[in-house]
Length: 497
Ligand SMILES: Cc1cc2nc3c(=O)[nH]c(=O)nc-3n(C[C@H](O)[C@H](O)[C@H](O)COP(=O)(O)O)c2cc1C
Image (cartoon, rainbow, N blue to C red):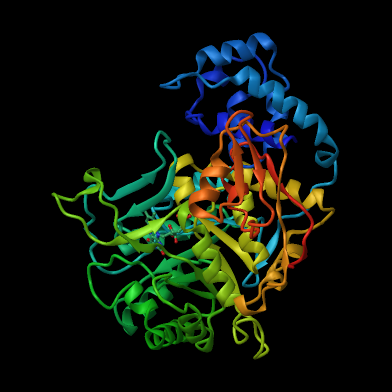
C-alpha cells in the first residue's frame, strides 16, 4: 500500500474510541466497521477491507453519523473505501493455506503463543474463562501468595500523548492477588478441568523457602501445567520479596532450587528488568534447573500526575506498556545471547517474552529473538481480550505471506542479526533521498537537521522544498524519522569516502 495512504488510514483508525458494542457497527445491516477499524489499529490494515466490504455506502454513511467520537466522527466511509482497495491487493495472501501457530513451550502443547500475563487481567475464574473463549492459548494467573494484600487507591497512572486516549506507558502500584490462596488454587483447578486444552500457569510468590515450596506444591496439586516464580514485582510492601529476589542471583538460585525439588511440572522464574545484567539472575535460575525464564516484569518508575497520588503521595512503582517494549526486547536478547542459557551446556532455557505487546508485530519480535511464548497485560487492560483476534490473524497472515507453515520456523530467526557495537560496519554510509513529489513542504527535516543533526538540509523558502547537502550529510537519518509524509527514503549503501 502507498505509504502516505497507509499513514492516513492508520492515523484515522488510531482516533477510534474502540467502543464496546460499537454504534457504528450496530447501524450497519451487513458488515462490521468497528471490527475493520480494530484490524487497522492492530496491524492488520491489509485485511480490514473484508469487514468493510459488505457494508453498502448507505450503511457506511450511517456508521459515520453514529460515531460518538467526542471531537469529530471517524471518517468511516473514506476509511472503508481505502481499505477495500488495499484488501483486494492482499487477497492473494489471504487465500494461502493458514500456517500453524501451535507451539510447544516447556514441553506443553499450546494452540498459539499468546498468553495473558499475570496481572489485573486474570484475577478470577470468569475473566480467564472469557479470555480462553476469545482465543488466548493460556494464562499466567495473577500471583498467589500467603500474605494479606491491601492495595492502594488509585492503583494506576498512564502516560499519554497529548490528545490521545491510548496509554504510551502505564504505571501500576498493584501487588499480588487479593484472593485467599485457597480460592485461587480452586479457581486454577476448575480452569484446568473446564478448559483441558488451554494452558494454566500458576504464578506464585513466597517469603521464605517454606512458603515457596508450599505454594508450588499446592499449585501442582491443583493440576496446573507449570509454575511461574514471581521474582520481579517492584512494589512489594514487604522487603525480601518480588524484585528484591530477582536482583539477587543467590536468592534466585535458592528459591528456584527449592521449588524444583518440590514439584515435577515446569518451573518458570520471572525476571525483573530493574537490574543491569539480567543474565546473572537468569543464569542462576538456569543452574537451579529452571525450565524456562519469563521477562520482563514492570520497570521501576515515577509519574507525577496528581490523579495518581495516593492521599497526596507517590511511590516508585512499575511501568509497562508500549514504552517498555524495546527494553524488554533488550533483556530477552541478552539472555538469548548468553552461551550458558542458549545451549552451551547442552540444555537450552526456553524464553517467554513480556513487555509492551500491543500488536502481532510486537509479539513476532519477541519470537524472532527466541521466545516460544509471549504474554500480554497492558494492551488487554486498555482494549480487552478481543485483541487476540488481531494477534492471531496478523501472525498467521505474516507467516502465510512468507510461505512458512509453522510459527516454530521463525523462533530465534533474528538472533544472527545482532552484534556488539564494536562489530557494526562503520565503513559504509546510506544517504537519505528526498522525494519532492511526496514532500509537503513542512520543513520538519530542515529543523531537525539544523538543530539536531549536521546542517545538511537546505530549505527553499519560496518552493518550500528541502534539498540535501551531500557534503555535510553523515547519513544519520534523523530527517527520515521526523518526516511526517514518508517523503524521505534511502540510496544504496556505499563505502565512506
Ligand atoms: C496492573 C498490573 C498488575 C500486575 N500484577 C502482576 C502480578 O501479580 N504478577 C506478576 O508477575 N506480574 C504482574 N504484572 C506485570 C505484568 O505481568 C507484565 O510483566 C508487565 O505488565 C509487562 O507487560 P505489558 O507491557 O504487556 O503490560 C502486573 C502488571 C500490571 C500493569
